[in-house]
Image 1 (cartoon, one colour):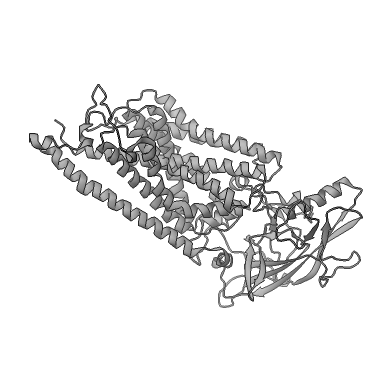
Image 2 (cartoon, rainbow, N blue to C red):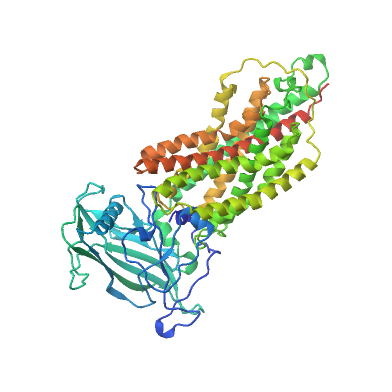
Amino acid sequence: MMVIHLQLFFSYFGHAFYLPGGKPSFYCSKSTATLSCKSDIPFMVNTLNSPRVAEPYEYSSFDFCQYNGSKVTPAETIGQILIGDRLAISPYTINFLEDINCAKVCTKFYSPNNKDSIAKLDRLKYGIAKGYVNNWLIDNIPVTETYQLSSHTVIKWLGLHIGTCKDEEICTEKSSRYHLFNHVDIIISYNNDSSVKSPGANIVSAVATLRSINHQSNEVSCNIKEPYIIKDKLTKNTSIIYTYSVHFKRDNLTSWSSRWNYILKSHSHPTILWFSLLNSIILAILLCGCVAMVLVKTLHKDIKCCCCSSPEKSASEPGWKLIHGDIFRDPGKKMLLSVLSGNGIQLLITSTITLSLACFGILSPVSRGSLVTCALFLYLLSSVFAGYASARIYKATGGKNWKTMTLMTFFLFPALVIGIFFLLNILVWAKQSSSAIPFGTFVAIIALWFGISIPMTFIGAFFGFKKNAIQYPVETNRIPRKIGPSSFIVKKWSGILIGGLLPFGCIFIPYYFILSSIWIHEIFYASGFLFAIFCIFVVTIAETSICLCYAHLSVENYHWWWRSFLTGGSCSFYMLIYSIYFVSVRSHLIGGTSIFLFIGYSIFITTFVFVLSGSIGFISCYYFVRKIYSAIDVA
């Protein structure tokens, strides 16, 4: 179900935006059904997840009613597999306009003398205690659980809880009595506007109310008020009868293209998101002012002073001009710097294209798994830009081992990512979680990596090395200049950490919603905001890095290569700190496995941001330094 939260998070801009990834289905009653207008409404079940435990599980891992018919489960895309999306056909049958009142689905029997029965019942109690929810899909739209609050029906959760604990606000595994929700009332709304020519009606919403009913073994009645209670210990033979009711409601005010809106009304945060966007814009404007002052006022004055040939003026040359003979001195570990910068450019291109496609609705929640699949193939194809950028930077710094550099560009960052995922995957394999990536999928991903990424990286590196090396505007002295003492703000680590504060200030609110959508399963459905904030984030990193780079050069410190990269990437340090705060204070995750998974994925996210933002900072400063030194006349 994590895929729904991620794609909801990436695919909405506006209040009634058409989702190009989907095609409306039309439904008619059984008596009027045709090939283009069917009566059987597709009902799918997905993985179960919990805000308290990080491991999702397949529907079949719990002892619920299972489908035994002849329908075939649709094939999963690589994106669905990577996210842990596991669809199966529901045992609940729904036909259009056929109301169902308290129909029996199945009966499950349990015996105290049967170890398998006890294990299945304990599994249900574990699911209730940990707050696991079913994720159902009717006509490819999530079924939402509802409750009454102040005479208004409010969407409570994206999914349906297994049960609850008697007289307890929070369930624990030490609870002695569990209420199992074995009955569900589903209300399906449909649009059948006669003024619009269409083969039939469209499904526009599906909401459910859960109940616990202690059905008698000899009859099924949904009028019983007594709940079904699972006790801590099974002392006698017992059975659980699962029932459901379905009612249809006409709703011509809601169109098919805006049918996701009823979910958004209870899970959107427009005020906070507008505040976040305004906050980011203000920070970007302030930094634009600082950069403008540096470029227009201070630098213009410095360059004018440098171009004056009088001895009096030459004595007052700015500090950054005095180090012109060392400014392009080769940095230490230049191959690593080139490789990381190339990988950062690759990530930047992948992120920009993916977010822009999501912003315009092309990557929609209707096309399940499309977000991850698109991002994966964009990353593989954009390896050509990583190879090209790495080759250009490495050749400019005088590097000669182009084959080693190309292999490092292809191997270093992807191998780190695959290594992290493999270690985390071993953990979820041990837990038999649905988020575990099958071995065959791992082999397929590695095959794609070698089959697409290697040739694309070598093609990019070939063209990068084929071009003439970037010419620097000043020559480098043979003897390095001694660097004097620096103030606090331009000292190495203090200056680097200061550089990450403002970019983090632009994204910490969206980052909170991202963490909430992944780990607490809250909907963050605002890719328009996210794309705008991402653009501001990129601009803020560039401006901050340029301002601090100028401050370092002004005190005659020419070690700007790695410093500009680390300055841009330092916002990832604050993201990691905030992640630790989130899991400690804001989330409800419990258990060593959940915490370990959270830390592992947080390290992956912060590593991604470090490489991306670090390359932005370095490329910006690289362009800035070449520009200012090409504008002075060095005698």
